[in-house]
Amino acid sequence: MKRIYVDEKWCLGCRLCEYNCAFANATSGRDDMAKALKDREINPRIRIEEGGGISFAVSCRHCDDPFCQKACISGALKFENGQVTIDQEKCVGCYSCIMACPFGAVMPSDGTAVQKCDLCMQNHQGIPACVEGCPNRAIIFEDREAFA
Amino acid sequence: MKYLIIGASHAGIACVEGIRSQDAEGQITLLSKEGHRPYGRPLISYYLEGKTDLEHISYRPESFFADHGAELRLNTEVLSIDAAQKTVRTAAGEEIPYDKLLVATGSVPFVPPMEGLESVEKKAGFLNLDDALRLESLINEKSRVLIIGAGLIGTKCAEGIAERVASVSIVEMMPRVLPAVLDEDCAAIVQAKMEENNCRFYLGDSVERFTGNSAKLKSGETVEFDVLVLAVGVRPNTALLQAAGAEIARGVKVDSHMQTSLPGVYAAGDLTLSHDVSDGGSEKVLAVLPNAYTQGYTAGQNMAGLASNFENAFPMNAGGFFGLHLITAGSYQGECLILPNEGGVKKLFIKDDRLVGYLLLGDVRRAGIYTSLIRDQTPLSTIDFGLIAQKPQLMAFSKAERAKMLAGGNKA
Ligand SMILES: Cc1cc2nc3c(=O)[nH]c(=O)nc-3n(C[C@H](O)[C@H](O)[C@H](O)COP(=O)(O)OP(=O)(O)OC[C@H]3O[C@@H](n4cnc5c(N)ncnc54)[C@H](O)[C@@H]3O)c2cc1C
Image (cartoon, rainbow over all chains, first blue to last red; front, side, top):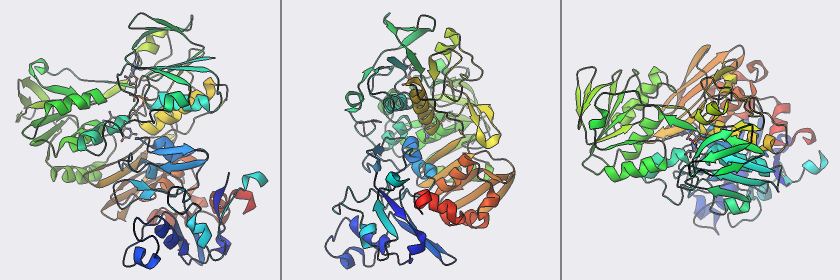
């Protein structure tokens, strides 16, 4: 199964992944990043942690045994074909998934529902925008289990 | 293989998913006393609040049963289990055989005797969708609603209807709201939030006598109301298994595979006893959904032949009241660290180098990182506790641990 992997030694902390994520999931201004994101506080689904000279990006791990999905009271979180996705129409915003996720990778959206990385499978992008735009290949989308 | 599941709610559905993770063939039948397709039980208050509707409240898509090759039989109550013959008997008198049985019958309401209760005309419970629909049919914008019980069910009910009725009064025997989940300080914050939103509390009080639409309280106060909601408490629904001869204490005893003392008979969800890892393994009823799901899934795997274990249960609750978010987990024991938290408060409970519990009110972002410290019983001396206490973050873990989390382990 292809997953997003983050190698912190290559992360520059440039936060391009956050911007690319916010842009990929923006509801308006799809052809112009500046228009879509200017003067907005972005709320990306991937987040940089930074400190003491270290930085790395965190987004949904798409766990094989997803605690978030087990804790979901509405059935809005689904685990199918190795991916955890959220149906924001069903989500009531109880935040049980935020309570359950060991990585802190499910987060409030700007509305009632939570949001999380869907590997850009539900937006227009088709492949993860964070991966595509990472200038130092610190975020990689590949199948590592085959080698494990 | 014939799998039979009594109760088609969270634990029952999880069992289907657990079975199908191992066995694509066996025949699965679910029997439900209710007339509705499985729905998110906690969503009944969100339904009244207008945050979900009768379509979105479904716990799984309509195609779920066809997709999983499982038969759902609604309006089918089981009256008895014959564990020797491996059959159950329904209220309609039908006898249904099984090879592996899951009992997932949840909770039953517990209403202490209250004088004059029969004189109240408009009353409802608040445990299932029929209760919510009934309550909805009883209320209008002029209704004065009286709720008995300020636990999770009573408070969520209050939130659900607060905007739709004239007033909500809540009587609770304990001196604070959400007594099982919150300590005094946090309870006071939640109470104030609810009071801003059309709720009025009578704490440390109880009803002495109902006379029609009037409740006389022990304190001497009188509350006039139009509609009464009984949300006092729940008990494990152990009746079927008790009669079948399974070992029962305060709830049904199960092993780490979710098997009861009767071979081939499993139990999962609100009717069982769990061992709480956050307080040294003491036996208790953990009637919360994540526990019901995990137990049901584990039961399903084991019924289908995979020896999996569920051994790290602990209490956890997430929810919000009128926009104030709240997440709690574990046990409130040991040393308590009180830390600033945007819009509320944070308390971390530390014992023997472990995080054993926490309370978060207000900013709850990334709370699951704290939850995982409880679940994994992570020695705090192996992480940067100062950092993680400020804010839940993966930076507090060692580089090697982080590589496992984010970079797929060995390859990092
Ligand atoms: C209003 C409310 C709010 C809640 N909020 C939360 C929350 O925010 N977070 C959380 O974690 N938990 C919450 N809970 C608790 C949560 O709903 C339960 O922990 C969960 O539903 C347990 O699932 P279960 O499958 O064990 O049992 P249940 O969901 O109780 O289901 C048991 C089913 O078995 C059926 N049944 C019983 N006896 C028989 C019989 N003899 N024959 C056939 N069928 C039978 C019942 O009709 C029922 O459908 C809430 C509960 C309520 C009522």
